[in-house]
Amino acid sequence: MENLTTTLLLLLLLATSCRVWLLMRQIARVRAERDRVPGAFVSAIPLAAHQKASNYTEAHARLAIVEATLDALLFIAIIWGGGLAFLDVWWRDQGLSGLWRGIAVILSLYFLVALVGWPLSLFRVFGIEARFGFNRMTWALYVADLAKGLLLGILLGVPLLTAILALMHHGGELWWLYAWLVWATFSLTLAWGYPALIAPLFNKFQPISDAALAQRIEALIERCGFTSRGVFVMDGSRRSAHGNAYFTGLGKHKRIVLFDTLVERLTGAEVEAVLAHELGHFRLRHVRKRLLLSLAAGLAALGVLAQLAHWPPFYAALGGVEPSPHAALVLFALVLPMVTFWLAPLAAAWSRRHEFEADEFARQHSDARELAAALVKLYQDNATTLTPDALYSAFFDSHPPATVRIARLTAT
View 1 (cartoon, rainbow, N blue to C red):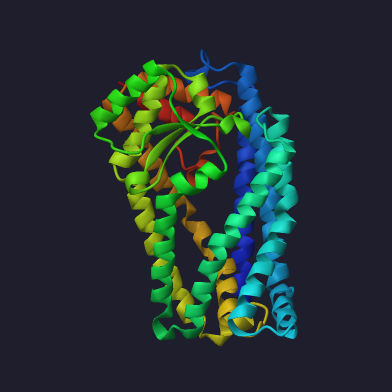
View 2: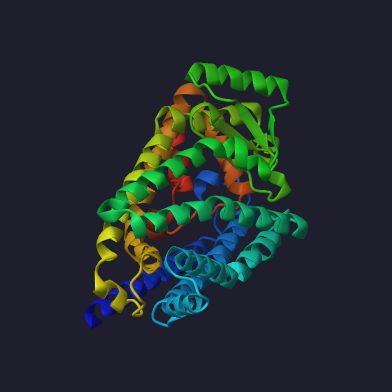
């Protein structure tokens, strides 16, 4: 048991140390290149904008170091500090047992962890984002979003948690397979209904009002053989000055969403090129592949959890909490990121490959030069660093580095 405890502690320290080390490399790199715009961007991005991006990247990296340290301390407090064991005993003393005690323990632990991390969230929004001119969130809107998110979490998350814990208690040896079927159904339903049922609770989505742009987009959609409920402009400017675009939904609810900040900043040809990139993700089945991988990973994780739930040393090594379905679920959820952290480079590489493929699709169905021009504007407007650390980028970045991506788009 002591060997297992030592191994898990080393895994935690290694993952945290590696994460902090990579963030420090990122800070050092953007600092070193702060006063020199990369050659490919000299004519497009002013030095002041490049320096702002460097400072913005450094600020977020420093906050991420604090978050990594806090995560490790919370893990130690919950596991070896007796936090989970205390909550388990406390709810038992309140007269709860079995399934209901499990729900109470997990929910109370979730809210406590969220409460501890809340100041960092506030600092990110009203500190860093405000300091660099990106935050447009009012306190009233922040509180409204928080309340809506909490309500949705309760309405959607509690029934799912209850179903999984009930299966762990009463589902027999194959409970993990039944739990996966429940979770997979929930995930697919959520992905299908999110654009039409949940997203409108937070933002307004309007069809494109510019007739010329709408005609250009309709022609592009027809060329790409795409069918959906349409392309929508979202009022992202209510919360942030950042510009973005994304593809969401399944089946008849799939749609492409453009931030109003993006539409206002780009020309019609550039919007078309960005839209072609997003259509590429759909036509090349990137969304479907990621969803299938997520479902497969969930099945594997639940299979491992089923084995650990009946292994006494697992509980003994992690704080000596009383074995139970809810304790197994919490402990596994806390330990899993220490293992999957080392898979981050593979996930990032796969995502970057999808971005390159979507860029190539956009090249075939629109103008690669317009996409490159749009990306340069977005890099500047979003204060994206042009000089990330190569190792940090390989580990974490879901999109290719700016210099590499633009070079590929303008190569021919």
